[in-house]
Image 1 (cartoon, helix red, strand yellow):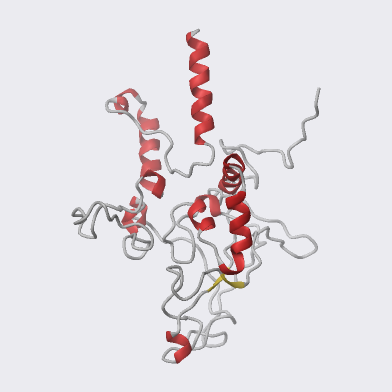
Image 2 (cartoon, rainbow, N blue to C red; image 1 turned 180 degrees about the vertical axis):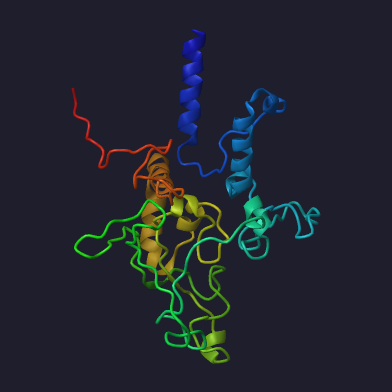
Length: 278
């Protein structure tokens, strides 16, 4: 009976976690740290340090000011659009927001840089061949000389706001010439984000004010109102299933040998085999 009850509790906890967007699903109880092997304890500490907290677990420090003092009115917390973001408070959602090291290689200058920035020909160019075998794994292999990237994006600009009063609008149009009326008219058109990596690359939306994908989806309007309405109209279980799928689209750690892995980093067959009724 005890084993059966334990199994039922575990299954219930597993079901309740579906659709949640939290950085650390299990927190150690007081004293539990003394029961763990040193290697496991250090690994847990590393996960805490690199975790990006979401609004579902108190991320964004909604009840504290930038000085760390409590807000004057706890009934008026610093939630969207007043919450701390990756610029105003990089520490608000992750230790690694401040304590980090630069990474990534960028090709510059490129022909898409706007006027006023470094353009092709102004300086020596750095070109990176994405099919090079000496780059960190995993890599996409070229097919007939072409590297096809499943980016889940149309790479187009879209107006996803309800209008000029929408808090998701930007006060300046950075694509316009500085100093012009177009520059100060604001901007409501944003580039569709690639979803490859969305599962472990928070925060979300162009301003970085959303800590969960669910918040970002439900904030879409304008040209994306049909997609938002379709998501909002789904039964809760189907909404959670969409979130769970998006959580699987992750950038894999350097050195990973396979493009599709399970939660333990081991290779996973894809596409999955469809189960047949017995």
